[in-house]
Length: 252
Ligand SMILES: NC(=O)C1=CN([C@@H]2O[C@H](COP(=O)(O)OP(=O)(O)OC[C@H]3O[C@@H](n4cnc5c(N)ncnc54)[C@H](O)[C@@H]3O)[C@@H](O)[C@H]2O)C=CC1
Ligand SMILES: Nc1nc(O)c(N)c(N[C@@H]2O[C@H](COP(=O)(O)O)[C@@H](O)[C@H]2O)n1
Image (tube, rainbow, N blue to C red; front, side, top):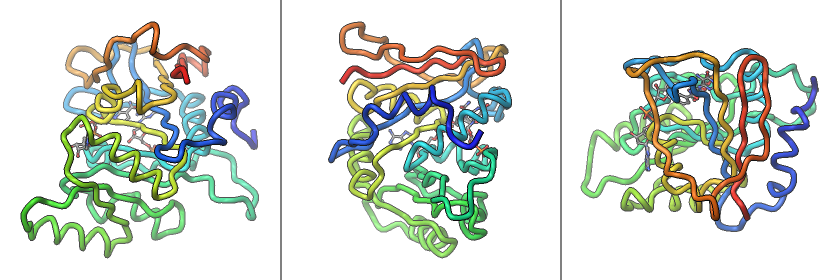
C-alpha cells in the first residue's frame, strides 16, 4: 500500500484542509488494553497494538504536521515518532515524518535520545521541545536548554499558565509556528490534560483497543464524562488486525 488507507484519510479530508487560524486540528490517539491501560506496571512500555494497527498509526502520523508526547513518554519510551514502518516513498516525495514535539517543562529530554539522533542522521525532523522559562534564574535549566539546543533541538517557550490554560496556550503557540494538524500520542498525563479540555481543544479521538488485559497495576488515564449534546460522535469503528479502532469526532 503506497498511501494511507481511505478510512483514515476520510476522517480528515472534510476539515483538515482548512485549519483554524488560532489552533491546529488535534487528533488525540493512543493504544489501550481492554481494561483501559496504556502501559504496564511502573510505566513499562507495552506493545499493545498488533502489526496492522501499528502500521495504521504510522499512516496516521503522515496525516499530521506535528506529533506530540509528554516528557514522561519521551524519557520512558525513548520514542522515534517517525513513519519507518511504511513502504518507502519515491525519492522526490515530500518528507512524510511529522515534527516531533515534546512538552517538557523541566527540559529533561536527554540530548542523546533517538529523536535527536534521527534528526542528526536525516531520518526525522528537528524535534521541538516546549518548556516554560523558570520564574527565577535557574542555571540547571539554562544548562539543559543549551545542551538540547547544541544537540539539535529547538526549544520553544510557553509563558507560565495555570494548568487549565496550558493546553490552549500550547496550541496557540504551535499554530503560530505553522503546525496546522497535531497528533497527540500520550502519555497518561498528556492524554488526561487534553481529555480535560477535549470539548474545545480536540477534534478527533482515535483509540486502538488491543484484546488483552493489563491489570490494575497498569497505567490508566482520565477522561471527562461525555456530554451527549456537545460531545463527540463515532465516525469510525473497525477491526484492524486483531485490534478494534474507534474514532470519535467533535461536532463542529
Ligand atoms: N499506549 C500508548 O498509546 C501510549 C502509552 N504511553 C505510556 O505513557 C506513560 C507515560 O505517561 P506519563 O508518565 O503520564 O508522561 P507524559 O508523557 O504524559 O508526560 C508528562 C509530562 O508532560 C508534561 N505535561 C503534561 N501535561 C501537561 C500540561 N497540561 N501542561 C504542560 N505540560 C504538561 C509535563 O512535563 C509532565 O511531566 C509511559 O508508560 C508510556 O509508555 C505513552 C504514549 C502512548
Ligand atoms: N499506537 C501505539 N501502540 C502501542 O502499542 C504503543 N505502545 C504506542 N506507543 C506510542 O508510540 C510511541 C513509540 O513510537 P515509536 O515506535 O518509537 O515510533 C510511544 O512512545 C508511545 O507514544 N502506540
